Image (tube, rainbow, N blue to C red):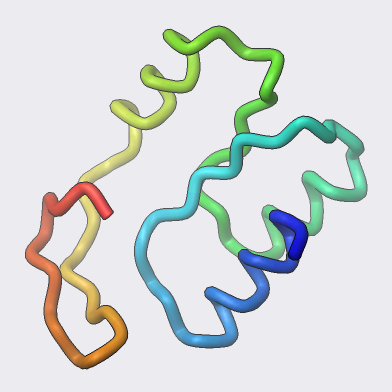
Length: 79
């Protein structure tokens, strides 16, 4: 399963949590496909760790969302 395939499965399952893609492919076509699936960020694997961490820290707070099994994750949960 590719990263894009995984995001498609998550969206089809109505997953509303954050999705940050850490991708080794940087084609415009793939980036557009990820954006169409409403990922929160795409970070190239060539990026240094600090850049990935800054991207994650810069994400705005999210609303609570449900996970499989119907549990409710509280806002601010790292998932």
